[in-house]
Amino acid sequence: MLFRMLLDEATGTVSYLLTQAETGEAVVIDPRAADVPVIRAMLAEQRAQLRWVLRTHAHAAQHSAAEQAALAQLAAPWVQQRPPAQPLLPLGDDYIEVLATPGHTSDCLSFRWRDRLFCGDLLAVDGCHYQTRPSQPQSLWDSVHDVVFRLPDETLLFAGCAHRGRMVATVGEQRRWHPWFGNTSRDAFLTRVASLPEGSRSGPAGH
Image (cartoon, rainbow, N blue to C red):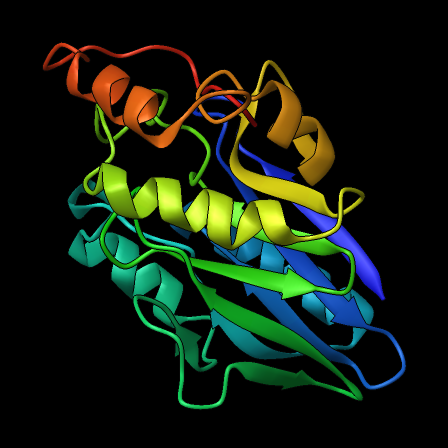
């Protein structure tokens, strides 16, 4: 499997391209319009066919007509907002598991491939460029603790934004030391989120 990360230095957002070399099938996760020429060039270089476009979440600011028109050039089925009836998406002789992880937004998804989970901004809490606090704090806590933190400690977490240039962590690390979810209770987390001032913004946390 070929694995590429596309980092936008200006915003810190990250897209991911996975290509199964044997079958030439590929999947892209959280692409931006600006990524499309690069993605198409990499697919051509690898002689690969895009099988799926996966999106962990999207905000209203990312729904412009120009953005959608550019992404439509990828010409592959989209999976976003809710898991499909069959949550295992075939990719050659492998598969990607779709997990419902609402909370950051109401319809967040995460995508598990082997020992990796692509979870978007699920762990960002107060560090998202497009919103100042989670849309559903209770659901967010449940998604992190009941889905993400139940994965093996060594599972790699790939975020939707780089924090100080870092794009990957492990479940074990985040369970122990995440500034919002580690070593705290659900009630304490919800109280802290409720105290966030409207309009506050900080750098992405917990990626």
